[in-house]
Length: 515
Image (tube, rainbow, N blue to C red; front, side, top):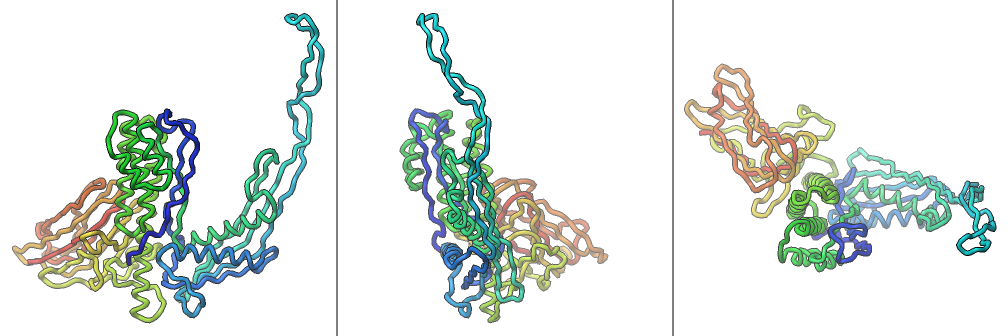
């Protein structure tokens, strides 16, 4: 399912800069970009009914409406759900309970020792040849007004997808702060009503984060330079494609070129956030951003502001992979529900069958063994109707231009593997060609293929084939091997195990023949 952009670029915050300043300087040009973040507990349904109740003290119907409105907006803007006006029309119910709300804002007078004017004295001035009046300073205890704000809201969100396993999450909000009344106060400290509104809004945001993907504002800095001024002004207006055109008209030398490359990276990152994370272009734009950030840092390794964007875009790539996995899980659930006429979490038609996080590979439901002698295994396009792989880790089925469906393996923190049971006889003197295509999306990926087989004596053996020992992002590569060449020679293949470590990788056109 392809949807239009689910996120709009948020407003730009600009602090004053001058054209003469190089790179970041004292005054900085800051952009707030809406990075998409996956839900903690995504709703596996197409239509959602939202029920919010405010039962505790100091809570009103307007508070419940505030939370409901925030959730409805998030579900609609995600591009994945429809909001139902009654529970009977919905595939899932999201319930929020607001209980006790406490909010207190009060002034406290405290005595502080301050260095202040305590009086005056007359003293002789030799230069002026007369007595002059001088101020006398010293420490004196004086009353100072402090504002103290304390508030809490007990809240919980529950997801019921009709599978008999409702899940509840604590989304309570808390606020504790104190500040001198001198100067401006945070909005939450201006009054008790303002504090109550802040607590309800914070609980709303926490509920949204639990159940649906949402934008998280992240700050990006633009490097400032006279030659880059036109592009910077366009970026500040959210016109990033035009900013790219302005910055790409020519290249420079030294620090100016590093600054240009950095800003180009910011533009690619911003454009990525305007595209759904499950669209392959989203990841491609983030990879392009990272490449430009890396080039800028290589040109000017001493610039401290060139390091944070690399960390930021790495986190964004991880978010993107998780969002792809969530959407795949949602689509699988919907397809299964439509096929069986019930709301239940089950392994769907897509080729990657997800094992629950807490389960080990041994507890996963294995696919029926693949048998036959010609084209025994043809799982390349990861389309529906083919036998499921057994998954350990994080993986999803994604689409890429010109390739239909393929598998994306996310192995940034732990290994991710796909296992296929086999029952393939290896003829004497015959060949068993294994082929696959892969592309590294992020990180330095190690990809191996482990083959479990029985030799001519019936003894079970395992052989590991290295596809890549640590390859960075790049184009599609093809790899192949003849499994009949393993030693001792196989008599019957039992299992194919493909494992990735160290990053995110896409896998396609996995094929195994026997002849």
